[in-house]
Length: 398
Image (cartoon, rainbow, N blue to C red; front, side):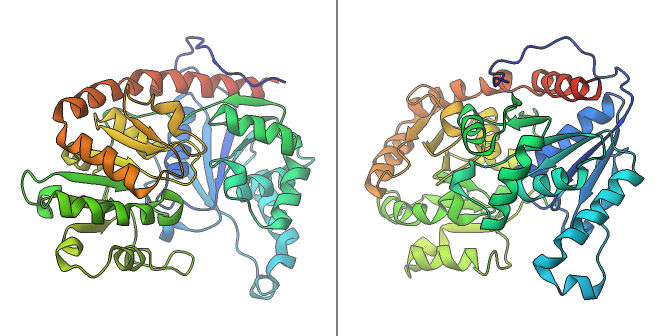
């Protein structure tokens, strides 16, 4: 089946009653774009009359977002300590407990979000007679899973009744390498006005008034290319003495064995003045306040799926500069029209030149900011909600 590039709205009302139970499976509800998107899908299905179950491997202690009212939360049952000690060899037992949970909840349609939950779901659902949907959240070759998971993905992905793909590039790769024939183009929606949640931190609490601010945000420093910003900020900080760089989202705990905040500060160097102008507040829930305070929003990522944070920044009227990485930024930014799109391997000197020009060019920043807000219509929640509901109801009636 060909990828549907331009899904059409059918005028389906969100209050139409749909018989059935839909489950969304993900590792946890930690801070991240995949988790937020899953919860938006859950709300759409709830409002359309579905019974909605969110299944996570980890419990509420890892949650960064509240579970919406009316949505059932289930955690995959834990294995016995003896089985847990077996590690990978306990994988069949994990599939059995997930399979039992799906039966217990009488699931009709199951959606696996990110690679590992999707593979587990496809294997656990085999023979149960329910419909399975897969949603990859990054460009697959940019962040390949471990070899056993790649084998299982190649085995299981052709079984999916539907693959929700964020970009055409990802869809083509999945078709070619994983046999994912049944696809629906499903970019992330932008919810406007942007919702706020805890923790809230006012920019005024950390930033001097009226200083220029470069803003970046994300939870994975290497993927987001935050290390690339350190030499850029060093160069700009000497030329624009009031300039501040704010990187939101990095926790103060280790990520894959790395203290990400300490890593960035080490890369920036020992100069105390520059260090004082690099702010790392951690996760915040009032992103709209920070977008409003930013002079420029930066996304120097090495790879993406479909960058929620860039979509939100543009919707908020930020002038944005992003790397043309696989995949997503080029679907949002048309270079020199509604922002700047730089080669993914652009040097620090190129970034410095572009950013300095924009920081000193208020008129150009304002033009980019105004044009950026067109994403509110292009990726509106109302349109993409109808696309999503059409897809899942089509499966339930299939």
